[in-house]
Image (cartoon, rainbow, N blue to C red; front, side, top):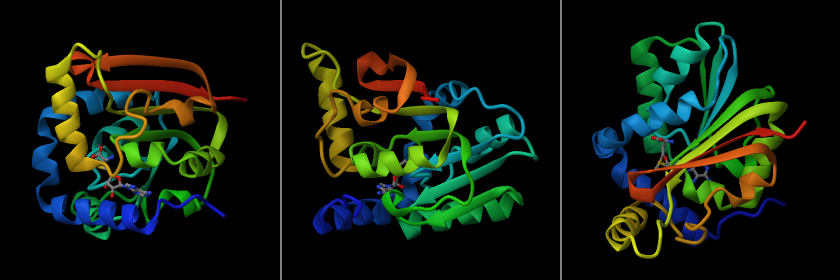
Length: 212
Ligand SMILES: C[S@@+](CC[C@H](N)C(=O)[O-])C[C@H]1O[C@@H](n2cnc3c(N)ncnc32)[C@H](O)[C@@H]1O
C-alpha cells in the first residue's frame, strides 16, 4: 500500500496548485535558467524517453523535446487537473505528438514503458514521499539519468536567503520537512550523485544515475 500523504496534505497540495495554475508560468520566469541547467544535467540523447515528474503546466516540455527530438518521448505525471489542463493545452497548441500526460498522483502512477531519464523540477512534496520516489525509480532503466532541482535551506547564517526559501516554500509545498536535504530519499537509488547550488545556496540541483 503506497504511503499517501494524509488527506489534508493532499487536498492542500491540490488547492495550492488549483489556485496558482493560471499565473504559474509568469511566476516561474525568473527561475527558467535553473530549469535549463537542470535539464542539461539529464544528458538526454536523441530518442530518449524521459519522465517529467510533477510536470505542472509543462514548462519543461520544450527544452526536453529539444534534447530528445521527434523520436524521443516525454511522459508527464501530474495530480492537479488545473495544472495538467494547461500542460495539455500547451501540447495541443504546439502539436507535439510525442508527449503523454498522466493525471495521477506519482505514488500510484503506472508508466507505459521503462524510461531513460527522470526530471523532478521543483517537486519537494513528491521527493519527500519515499513511495513516490520508489515508484518513479521502478519505472526507470538501470543506468537512467535522474535530476532533481528545487528549494533548500542555505547555510544557517544566510538568513535573507533562508527567509526567501521559507516564503517560497510556504507558497509551494505542504511540508518544510527535508528542506535541508530534499534529495535524500532519491539518493538511496542513485550512483554518481552530484549536488550543486544556485541562488546563494537556496536552490539545489542534484543529479545521478540509477544503480545498475
Ligand atoms: C512547483 S510545481 C512544479 C511544476 C513543474 N515541475 C515545473 O518545474 O514547472 C509542483 C507540481 O507538482 C505537483 N505535485 C505535487 N505532488 C504531487 C504528486 N504526489 N503527484 C503528482 N503531482 C504532484 C503539483 O500539482 C505541481 O504541479
